[in-house]
Image 1 (tube, rainbow, N blue to C red):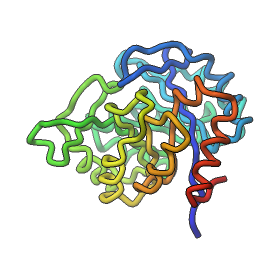
Image 2: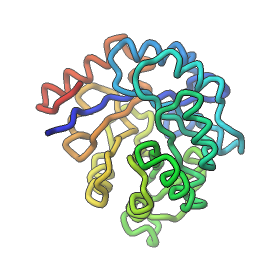
Image 3: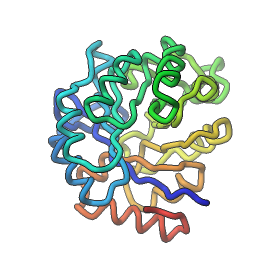
Length: 256
């Protein structure tokens, strides 16, 4: 059976407000996360992803109170990331209403945290958030480098090798975000999606660059099981989720 493609709005949250920039910079206010989540739930979103974008760079915990208020307003799965450092953090997020936890910076620094989380809660609760950028570093064979701290810090780690390692350790899903495409609204990085799809079998969420409904089907053709966007939903018409689903359906892919 073919699994329906999921359409996922992303709430990048900083100091309790949704923000959005270009290439992870120049952030501008996009609204209240609770209100936006409520709106997207009503508009037909399949999931919501909530990323506290300065928790890791600011060395603080996720804003649990905002997570809780967001979870209370929606009836679809909620993934929360930013500042997740331990299995206990995941436990707390689940108790505050999250369905899945997303991890990035800490997993790169201490990969065994993936084992600790998945052994305690199962692979289905853990999403690897991978912020990757193109690089000419000869040590990064694929040309795609892992970054951490909200895209602020390069690691010299090959994104494809990191995907393999994380999957072997048990992550249940990968959220692949192209820093180069992020916020540009010029389309997904299809080459990056295809490259990651070739080395992994877990569900793959494509993120970064969506600006028009017609941008989504090519990402699915490249190997994405779900598609995520922020700017075009935050600043677009109220029926944008429906438009995206119509475009995906018209291209021959099943949607919910």
